[in-house]
Length: 317
Image 1 (cartoon, rainbow, N blue to C red):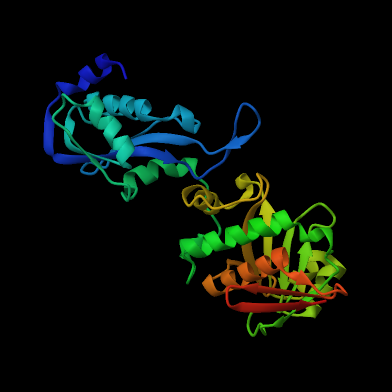
Image 2: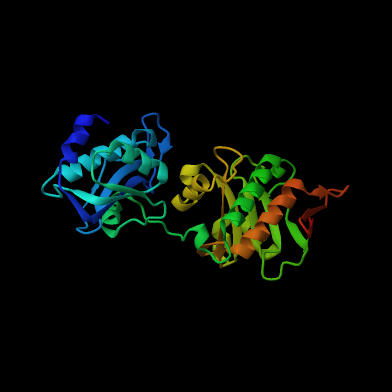
């Protein structure tokens, strides 16, 4: 950043008892770029924890929002008498790498720069960003009982193996598989593989063979009308995922088979209420994806056997 810009604020009074928080934030929306492809915009932002005043830069692509944008915003914020006109004693910056870059630019200022990757978004800043964001209808995957990062990683890895194995090349949505071992109890006991028609790829899980019949007769609408419960694992491009899922794939570096093959698992309770799978359910779905990808078919092609760690599965037509 030009030294002249930094010089604008280094002579300002420093209020040692005041703290500002800032960083680079990924917005929970998708926008279309000049090339027609969707992307997640980022902003630079600062807020005073004492006054609640906040400043946010214009949203832009990630490569356009870096330490220079953050510092330019700091210069504008600190140098504006109407909003501040002084420097705080402490700047709390999200992330060590970014904090170090800010620290190096402010060597002559009497400001302590502290890194804090766990810093939450202050209410004032959240209010500034609210008009730019979209509200999600579903809770995040990690908010479900028993769902931890390692559970999501196992699910993503199994979904990737399933997609690469392409079991829809030998199965259609008319081939109903019953999960005979182990017994499913309260979990779905039947499934079909989607994708033979080359449109939607994934797996439908049913609580009964009757539910599959409803789907075959009238599609998802008939299933909902009959108030049958089911699960669906589907694949789509990242920008069609719930925002919280897209964040997890990036933040946890979850594996994926292709740009249009990001998996998501949902349950339809009584055909109506949409919800996430909990930890037990997601592990069950993960095992079955693994069996569909790696299991062995019997010579007559009527049953599929597989083993996941110490668990044995048998699926029959």
